[in-house]
Length: 547
Image 1 (spheres, rainbow, N blue to C red):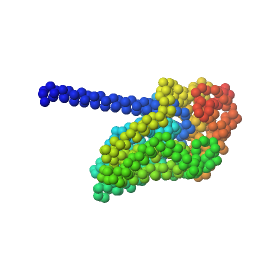
Image 2: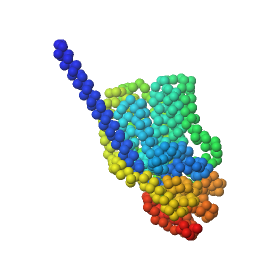
Image 3: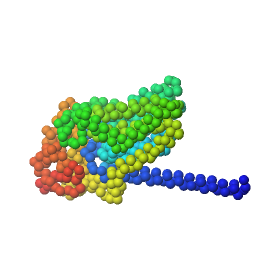
Image 4: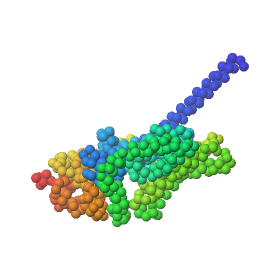
C-alpha cells in the first residue's frame, strides 16, 4: 500500500469519525430540545392550572408555619414532610407568591422525578433508549397532567423519592458489591417519600424483605452488614421528622393523620358524595378509577412495552438464549411494590383519581430489569417498539402539553399571578376602608395569606376541619383546631373578623354569611377573587358604622 493510499484511508476514517460525532451531537441536541420543551410545557400548564380546593390544605402551611405549630395550632390531615417542603420553597422563592412558590416546588419535584427515573432506568438497563423513553412517558401521562401532578398538593411529591429509593436498591443489588452509602441514600429517600404521603410506605416492605436475600450470591452475614444495616440506617435518618411529631404528641399526630381519614372524613363523604364528581365510595368505583389510570393512555403503552419485553424474555428463556443472571429477586421486589401500591390505592374511602398514580412509576423499573436480562442481539429486536411508543407518547401528551407552551407567552394570566393579585386587592380594599384589624373569615384562606393578612386558625387550611364538625365525636374534636356551625358566633364575637371572603361554597358558607349580614357586614366588589369555584365576595363593615 502506497503512502497516498494510507493517507487517503486515514482521511476517510477521520471524515467518518467527524460524521459520527456530528450525528451524535445532533441526536443529543434533539433529545435535549425535546425534553426542554416538555419541561417548559409542564411548567406552563402547572402555573396556569386552575386553583384547587386541596391547595388550601397544602399551600397555606408554607405561611402558617412561620407563626404557628403544625397540628397543634391548625388542622393538617397529612404527614409533615409536604408542609415543610412547601415552607422551604416559600422561604426560597417568596417573591413568587404563596401559590407560585408552592407550584414551583411541585415543578422541582417533576424535574427530580423525570431525571431520577431516567438515571435509574439507565443504570439498571444500560440503555439510553429506556433512559429517555420512560421519563417522556411520565411527562405525557394523563393522570400526572391533571390535579395529581399540576396542583400544589402532596400527590406527586413522594414519587421522585420513591423512584430513587426503589431504583437505587435494585441497581445496587444487581451487582455483587453493593455500596453502603448508596443504600443509605436509598433508605433516606424511601422514608422521605413516606413522610410526604402515608401511602408511599407501601414501597418499603418488599425492599426491606428483599434486603435479606439480595444480592443472591452473597452470604447472609454479608447481606446483613452491607445491605440491611445501611438501608435501615438511611430509613431512620429519613424518618426523623415523623418520629419527631409522633414522639412529641402521639395522640395529636394520629388524630390528624389516621383517625380523620378513618372516621369523620368517610362519614362526611357518605352524606355529600353527590357534590363531588369523580369520586368512588365503593370497590367497583375505585377499580374503575384505577383502570382509567393504569390501563389507558400512557399507562397502557407502558404495560404493552412490559408485556412485549416479558414475551421476548420468556421466549428466549425456553431456548436458553438469555443472560445467565435471572434477576428474579429484583423482579419480585418490584412486583411486590407494584402489588402493594396498587392494593393500597384501593383502600381509602372515598377514592379520588389522584390516588392511583403510584403504581405507574414501578413499570419503568420493571421494564429495565427485564430488558437487562436480554442478550444484546435481542435488545436490538425490541428497539422498534420503543421508537413507535415514543411517537404514541407524544401524540397522547400533545393536547395537554401544547396549551402549556402557549401559556408561557402570557405569564400575567397564570393562576399563580391571578391569586397573588386577588390577595393584594383584598389587602388594599381592607386598608382603604380602615378594616385591616382582625382576621379574615373565609374557607379559602389562600387569598388573605397570599397578602400577609391574618386568618382564623379554625379555617387556616380551608374547609376541611369545619365541614367534618357534625361528624366528629367530641373526644376527637378536642384534638383539632376546629369549629362547627354552632360555635361560629362565639368565635367571631370574641375576635371580630375584619372581613368575610365568601362565594366559593354557598351551602357550606351559609352560616358565615348569615352572621356577616346579621352583624352589619356589607358586600363589596373586589376584582381578582374569581376562581373555578365561583366569584369571591368580600363582606366588610362600613368604617363609620363600626365606630
